[in-house]
Length: 233
Ligand SMILES: C[S@@+](CC[C@H](N)C(=O)[O-])C[C@H]1O[C@@H](n2cnc3c(N)ncnc32)[C@H](O)[C@@H]1O
Image 1 (cartoon, rainbow, N blue to C red):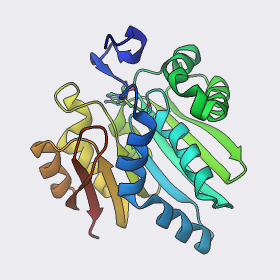
Image 2 (cartoon, rainbow, N blue to C red; image 1 turned 180 degrees about the horizontal axis):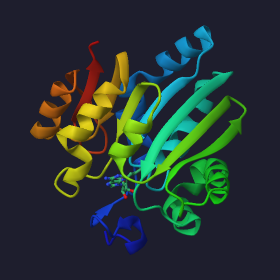
Image 3 (cartoon, rainbow, N blue to C red; image 1 turned 45 degrees about the vertical axis):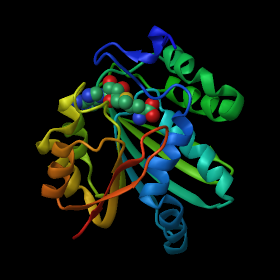
């Protein structure tokens, strides 16, 4: 199948995500493998926000998929703080175009995200915060415009979970460099977790160095196994 050019990140010659299965892929690899529903349930019970970190905001597919996933869970009073980063921000128009393949399934969620994204000025580096209020609760989306390591270092508190989604390590080694993964480890609370689609040996070893115990869990979309890391302490 010919891939439309707008789906390819020209800086890395790689697609933002799998064209057909991206929503389900995020739900398996990032949400289920990070025990997200259990973590959200316990955050609601403790009346604290769940803190999610992501390396690689791209077109915001993970955020759209997250809205769908937690809506379906039937949980309410959810408070999520979502910290993400983008070095090459898309225009809202391109974001909408990239996500348009999913509009029959999550059209409302795409509109909500694109509207929020239009309210920020991505020419200004650093944090930009968007409050996304939905029937299930609130996602406070904080997007750092700039380099991933700067974003991780700028976090004041550690995250409960991380979605590591920075293109494949061959296409974009900078998102998998040991220095960055070490910083992610430092900004993960004990018992927290990270998940990624890549099973590359150098990523697995760098995550272990960063304090994660690594497990192989089910993947999606032809990828049988993917990586999950649990932060020991
Ligand atoms: C695979 S895409 C992310 C897909 C995204 N999570 C989604 O669901 O739409 C990876 C993103 O990371 C960005 N990126 C790559 N290297 C980066 C870096 N060093 N710092 C910050 N962002 C980076 C890319 O521009 C790209 O948008």
